[in-house]
Length: 289
Image (cartoon, rainbow, N blue to C red; front, side):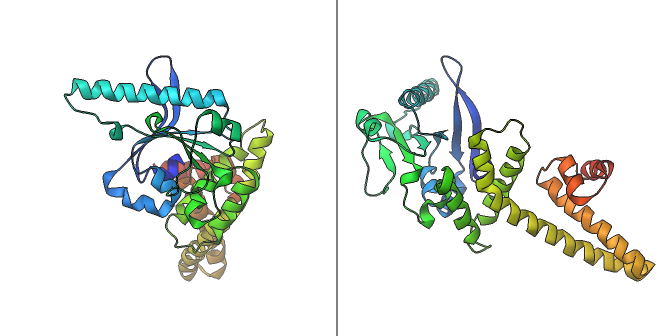
């Protein structure tokens, strides 16, 4: 999510808050000139049109964590009020950030405990705590399956996330932010795959993201082949057909390696996939810097 949102505004990860050392998963500050562009992300974009803290939960958010998240947001509000007072500014309640908690599921007991309600204008799966609480919870697995909720459902788990990935790949290739989202999901899949001691949840995410990575990799390799063949043909005219073919294959591998480097893939993995020596990959990396 961090990589996808950075084009729209400032993203702070593990942002510290006052009092004891605690962090908020993500705090997003949209750029004023990109707020309208967020509409392309549907529900997720509407959530982020104002500065807001976001807390993510892979499994159902526990009651204690709802309380903790609200406490951290209250600390953040306190910081903002103190800053406004020091600068002689008036800070209204509507200027304070709304906390978004993203959870795959949420029990009826929790909804009753925290007096949560839904609002017609936001639809199913979005729960509001009392107005003065500044907290909203997105229950991903309750969201309707529409293009409007697609980017939010990518944050789910199990079949919900897997189906959202398939829906993303089924979109036209020129659909707004489809390519960027696929690339970020592919990089996440690669990074998770390289981890040691993967738990069940991690393996599930890797499996869910695999289709996005496989399509992205196939397109990257094919593009590298086309560029390599083009360069190889030019060389072939000068050095003969045989040399041209050899050079073309080498250039194909080099072009593919350069693209993989631009995606921040590991040097070892690039070497294995392109059959180029590790030293050659390191040299290409140095050229790009």
